[in-house]
Image 1 (cartoon, each protein chain N blue to C red):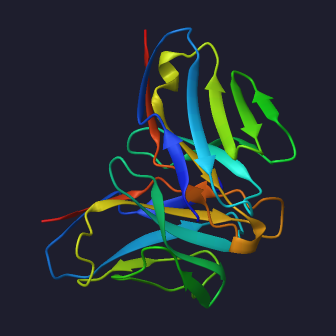
Image 2: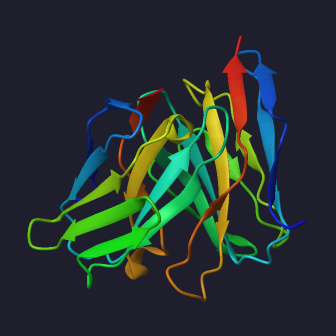
Length: 114
Length: 113
């Protein structure tokens, strides 16, 4: 069953702690993306990666870090430098080499800072 | 300018009615315009998409109308059903941007039974 999985579904963090959100895909997609969603706002791009071992900052990368050591995996770390991390985080992937590169989204992780 | 402006923010429609959501963009390099549907607590799912070389695309009850000269596009949901109640996002992308999606702010649609 192909798709994108994100874990955990819910995550609670104390202020000052780093946390890592998992994103895995078995669609053999080249590109992967991380978005942040806040109430009443559209999705904003945090980081994206088109190939293994390479990634670029999106519009709101400050306070976040990523890695892309495997094609299937693109974990996102929310660091203590992120001032307002409470949000719904969405991972997506796409096949860059075909068509318009339709993005498929995972189910999301809701992060709450206590 | 990368922004995509979406309206209205919320929309309430009676069952069987037509839901219309509008989006406008500035960047003429955009060449693909998808619409996503998102249910609460879930990730967005692609609903329908259009390229600017056509003025309309229809898939079942969902239609995109595209006005290239005005840089506007809209989603029409015919015969709206309570199961259509969700948040809808328009988006835009270009081949020169690694296919990054620029999203509108979303429209929360409620279809009353």
